[in-house]
Image (cartoon, rainbow, N blue to C red; front, side, top):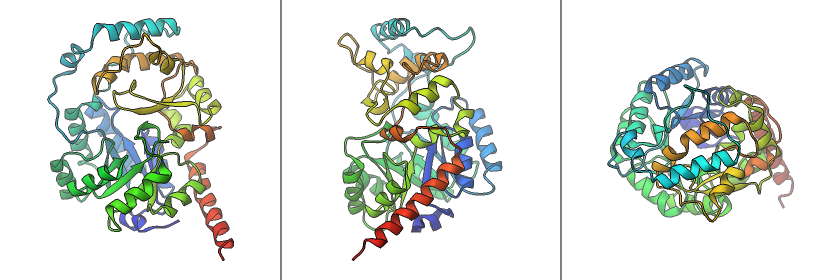
Length: 367
C-alpha cells in the first residue's frame, strides 16, 4: 500500500487519521500513517502548545499534521460575550427545557467551560501560529480553503495545505487558491459533510483537479477493502476519522461507559445529518438529543459559531452524564462497523492486511 503521497510525507501507508486526541495521532504516525490533530477543542493556546510539544516528543520522529477550522472569508467577530448576546432567548430556553426533559443533570460546581472558541476565526489563527512553532508537515482546514495569506504562510514554512471538499467545483477553487491536497469528503462522513456520496465524489474530484494534485478519499472508510476502493477511484490515499473514536488511545480524551456503548451498538443507519452541532450540516449519532431538535416545536439551529456557543455547555453536561441514549457524538456511517474498542496499532494493521488481501483477490480474477 504505497502511493506517491507516501514519499511526499515520508510515511509508510497513505492513511491519514483526523482525531482530536494527540494519543491517537501519535499512535497512527508511529504505525506508519499520518496522524492529524484536530485543534478546534483548544480554547487555550498554552494547552495547544503543550499538546504539540507532547506530539513532537512522542511520535518517534515521524511526521504528523494539524487540522484547523478557518473560513476563507474573514468574519467580523467580537468576543464570546458579544456573540452570546446574539443568541435568542428562545434557543437558550429550548436547550434547558430539553436537557431537563432528557434527565441530563447540571455539571458539578466549577466544572464545564465556555463554548468551543476554536470555531472562531481569530482563535483558529492563533492555533496556526502555535502550530508553526512545531513540526507538522501538513495543515488541514476543515472548512475548505483557508485565506490565501494563511496558505502562503504555511508554504513559507515548508508545510503543505489540505482542504476538505464536498463537490468538484469546491476542489477546483481550493487548487486555484494554492491548496496542495484535496480531501474528497463524501456524504457518509462524520462531522461536516456534503451531499454527494464517496463513490461518486472521489472520481469527480480526481478528474476535476487533474493528475498533479493529490486527492484523499474520505467518508465511510474503516476497512482495507474501502481503502482499496478509494485508490481504485483515483485517490492517492484516505482520510479517516470516525474509526479512531473506537480506539483504546482515544479513551484518554473521552472515556465513559455510555460513550462506548453508544457507538458499539449503533448500526450504519443510526446517524443523522443536521445543523444542530455547529450551525453547518454535520453527521452525528442519532440519539434522543438529535431527535429533540427535529421535533415540531424546536427552533431552527443558529449559524456558526452561534450554534456551538449555544450548545457547548449542553454537550459537556450530556457527555458527562454518560447516557448512551442522549450522547452528542459526531460520527460517520462507518459506526456500524465499530463494534469493539481496539488499540490504534491493531486497527492500522488490519487496514493494511485487508487492503493487501483485497488487491490479491482482484489480481486473481483478472482475465
